[in-house]
Length: 358
Image 1 (cartoon, rainbow, N blue to C red):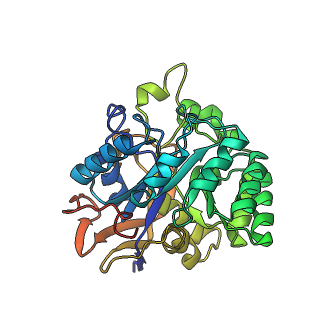
Image 2 (image 1 turned 90 degrees about the vertical axis):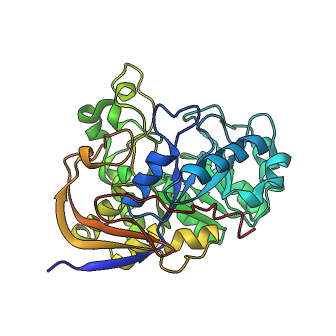
Image 3 (image 1 turned 135 degrees about the vertical axis):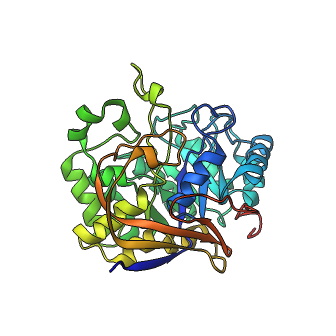
């Protein structure tokens, strides 16, 4: 007999939803449909999809487009820019889910390597919204210096190596206001998968060693990891099959079954897996779960991931063909069933979660 489990208010705080200048890759409509099919109540969009979300006009454009087309609730990050916009984005913080600072090279043109410029963003950004950072290896130490100086809550995205885990484990032991997220592609894939996946296994941070993967699982077991996030970043098949494939893989529809598979195969407690997808995210970003907002999953359902069944516009997954356990049966948002296990019914009135809680 199947065991149905309820998870309240799942949120993915790390997505690149595309649309607008990159609508050929995917749209807010297609990717938020993927989100509810993956069990999510809300998703937060990163600022490096063009036009970059770095000022009032770009923020308003994305919020307006999401309000008109999203299938679920949402938040939008503001981006730190090389042209110092620290004062401008601080004034817009109430309508955004947080500030994103790219501190190592990745997609887009928002890279900030100057520590003094990073410091200005930390000093000006209000503490009631988290700062989310892309920081790899010892760049994490530069960011921890700023956290130590300002005590601003900081979420370290897509941690992928044992060294990074060690830095953040020590920071937590020190009492710094830091949290960290890990992506399933770094938990289930390693450098050894790159030859078979080719461009479809290229993301940033890149895949790492089996030892790094094992360190991430150990950090989950130890309770060091706060969030399981997708870093959902769809590209077309043609782009990924090209001579210069872009960074990024989809993940909104595979996060939950991959973590439920870990409940079965790695003895990760169900409560911990669920919290990293829901309660911990709500706590870090300061949002409350609305009434009747939850996901029902069949914990025992075993099946093979099939890219042809995905709702994401990209139509592929690095996990295609993988055997998993745990299937989304239904997703409910404020009493509306937006996913019935097969079809999506977009939310009637999608909301920006952050305007209301300013």
